[in-house]
Amino acid sequence: MVDVGFVREGAAWAEVPKGLPLLIALAGFRDPGSAVAQVVEAAGADHDPEDEPEVVVATFDPDELFDYRARRPVVEVDGGRMVALETPGLVLSLRHDALGQPFLLLAGFEPDFRWRAFTDVLRDLVAEFDIASTTWVQSVAMPVPHTRPIRLSAVGNRADLVERLAVWTPHTQAPALAVHQLAFALARDGHPVLGLVALVPHYVAEVPVPGGAVALLEALTEATGIVLATDGLRDAEREFRRGVDEQIAGNDEVVTLIAALEQQHDAYLEDLPDGSRLAASEGELPDAEEIAGELERFLATRPDDDA
Image 1: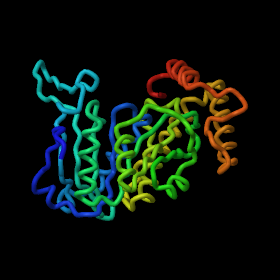
Image 2 (image 1 turned 180 degrees about the vertical axis):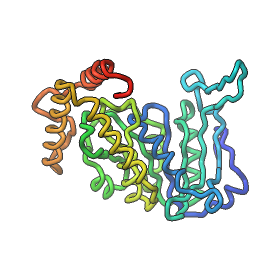
Image 3 (image 1 turned 135 degrees about the vertical axis):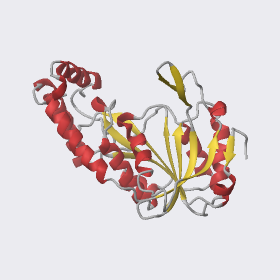
């Protein structure tokens, strides 16, 4: 394999079954609603250390892939002493879902450097383990209301799933991720690849939005058969919506702006499958900063125990 600080864990590497699905969940460029982070947490919530332990299969040397000025290590200081230093990482592990089914998870931070070499390593891995499919997850901030279930966009060469799972399939340009370069290469190899993108409400994208992770996990099950528990996330999503509703209840301007998003959202879904842009509208779209600014000003006037 190409040397990018990729280190196999010998015994664990040898024990990986052939034909598993690969899930890629990388933090880095953006993670609106912390959707990717919550998917990774869910992927580790189902395994029993005494029954089906998580097994580290391989790691990447962070010095080879990360820019520490942009993605700084975190130091923990206690009473004037440095007690810990956490460096950004990228780990391939063997996990088990709620049914005990094994799958491979590549999680951690997106590489800053050497994307082509990183891609070559993953292509070799896919071939060596005869990976059944590669699926990655991400989220984007979109002009959608928090009062509606979070929907998905999707991209990849699994056309049936893209058509079935995606409500938004635009012709657009956006900053690429390392997984996009990997996906191009794997698609050329004839390997099944799929990217699942949660469309998170733009005005709450800076805080965890559990519904984004729920949408990704449900689609992941359909795409790969991996079953990860969502009960806790669903409870958290109901609490999240209730909290946002309570916070905005006294601000008529914010309520009006969100109502406009609801009307646009519902009209778009009614027009499917002929609609082509989630943001298409005759009227002016409420701006993310406008809604977020109103929320910030409103919450600043409320007591802390009400926020």
